[in-house]
Image 1: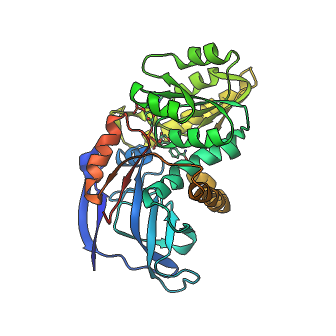
Image 2: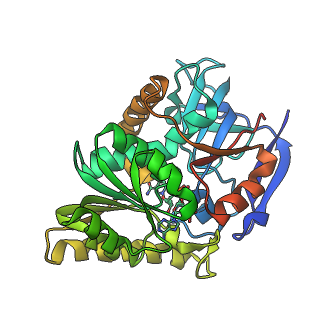
Length: 347
Ligand SMILES: NC(=O)c1ccc[n+]([C@@H]2O[C@H](COP(=O)([O-])OP(=O)(O)OC[C@H]3O[C@@H](n4cnc5c(N)ncnc54)[C@H](OP(=O)(O)O)[C@@H]3O)[C@@H](O)[C@H]2O)c1
């Protein structure tokens, strides 16, 4: 049986995403073959395509951090799972495909009746948002937070989960994202025309308890200035490494990937030693999942429950077939996207 998947053979722009047809993969011992119903398209995919993300696989690779799919075939040694079950996974790469084989331990059951595109939004974006809110910053009822990129995939998830937690929320966004940020309960700050540090101090007086910092580089230090005493910056993104969806520096070498991580490290140490009782902590979904896999399953299960109870409603910006991966990346790179872009390989 044949299937199609997207491959990247050179780091670079959206034109590097090519659709190929090949034999369907066979599950090895302990693996399950999954037919992909929905694969998320997110900035980490773009950063990997450009060769900028620390998790970038060797070439050639198939992008795709997160998926929802149907169990299609079981490899030897797999038990407790039947074909037809709907599952979720965060393979980090490989989800832009019709079929993918994954170790059974990577699969999380999905409750019946959920829309696959909405469900896939939870796997990367909402788990990231949930863990940063409740495990990193630990902010509760009445606390003030600043969310950068608030109209984006992770940003809109932070707003929905922050509203449930009773937070007072401020969100940086472009003018296009402003209505969505307001609708989700945030106070928008136009990052293209306003100084967010000044705005936060004008609006709150002493500053916010937590900043969710997705931009990276020197922006982390600016974010620290928006904190009140005792506050926390959760640094988790590299959006500033991109300009119009391409590498801002024009580079994609391996050493460049680790430069940003070194900068993160400097700001974290700087946050501890500088006066003002303000800290900078890093967050990485993949590292938390590697170190504490049970937390990923637990948090994703809580989020599926919230989706089933309609307490959260992921914003789906647009759905594309697998062959539309290039257009999906072009759209994300152009900016002004509200919510999550999703590939639906079975149409
Ligand atoms: N550490 C982790 O575990 C983890 C997990 C998931 C994602 N991430 C990171 O999270 C970030 C967001 O990912 P995503 O998929 O949610 O991206 P996304 O959907 O493209 O959202 C990014 C948002 O940031 C906005 N933005 C761009 N430059 C900005 C600036 N200078 N100030 C404020 N907002 C700005 C964009 O607005 P406009 O387009 O309107 O300009 C867009 O709404 C990425 O850096 C990604 O790598 C990290």
